[in-house]
Length: 367
Image (cartoon, rainbow, N blue to C red):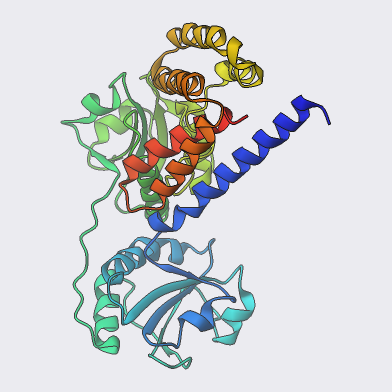
């Protein structure tokens, strides 16, 4: 096998391992509702704690409407060891839902501690009512958590200041409080906002167009919800005509804004990677030690031409190349190992972003 082919295969493996590591840390930032499947249901439910389980279908409108209330419930009980809040996707796990007599969605059942004989919940589908039910059945006294929204609320006072800011890419949902489709979209839109809350240049916002009719008229809003994208270079606004699942929004925002996040807000293995530097880095990695200083100078020249986030990432490329020259070819691998250990610790999301970007760039320098 030729050297170039070996190098390509190794890089492919490295990037694959990077992606796996990113996925490995997703659970720390996942929803506070435990996802139950046929493989883990019996080991989680009917054990040493009571369990409230929602049996749902992804396409079900009532389930979508319940989602933000149920997630609020999960957040409130996440530190309560005697109670589990879980959910089962009945499209994926039909036999499990059939086993517990589920015939409509959502079906919510309470499983007492040590029992797989459920009690069906028949009350209102609000976080308050569900919390009262769980407290009664589980013998707890948990107060509902106040969860701040990551969606920026627009008004007539702040609309122009936020939406027309030429340093921000802004996605705006024009909605009406009475609109059923808007209510169904709400939990998905909140997840999108959460996914991009660390991106300084991206804003996920909404406007009550029923209250602020002048803005709805100005931007040609005739139905709800209407989504419009206001990129940095076009504050007249563009219609968003894509799908309304989290992944649809994420793909759109990543493409339009140059970001690299998944639906959970985690950086992907491409975060920080600057394509225009790829050929030079390959040449640098393939070169003999004596030739690397000259290539380093060329990398520095190319980085000087970069703008925006690419310029910020380019500085990491330069620093990495310098360290490889000064400390030897094993520097990148050793630094990746160090960052992996750091990522296993309890660190802030912003610090995790920083480490993942560095690790992605370092992976390109592994010989």
